[in-house]
Amino acid sequence: VDGLDVLWSKSIFVLNSVYVNADQPVESLIPKVRAAVGHPAVLMWVVGNEWNFNGFYQNLELQVSRRLLQNAARLVRSEDHTRPIATVFGGLPDREMLTTVGDDIDVWGINQYEKTSFGPLFQLWGRLPTSKPMFLGEYGADAFNTIKGRPDEMAQAEATQTLTKEIIANTSQHQGGVCIGGFVFEFADEWWKS
Image (cartoon, rainbow, N blue to C red; front, top):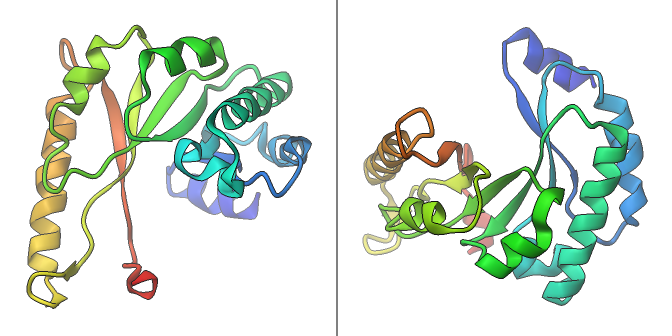
């Protein structure tokens, strides 16, 4: 909660992740929610991160992961019915996933990397059977240019600027827009992963 106080003092809201790894029982999210439930910096709760790819970091099957997501979201809602619950999905969920998850998730975060454009992502989201908002849970580019074999911060900045402009052009503040924003990924490069 101290960290939330610092962020709030700087007028920063957070999407508070409370359950992403099934190495802990789903009930482990309850104390996390209770610790921050009254904090004004919490904009919404987040359950799962690319769980359709990683099986909640335990390689669970997709349907098992989906049920876990729903159980986690219901637990969060039982502790706080005033804030939206989001999940971050790897790529675009299909109609079946949206319909099956239903009202358990209020906002969908999408992690999708398509070089320097999101391609038809926003248009495809708009065609899905949902009126729920979406955001980009991660977007941006690494500073390391694999073609040149060295850091290329100018290319990174250009890619991030181009992607940000696409988000703005598709914001829900405009007629027909479907996106409520996005999070640049990330502030520090992950060269250690290569």
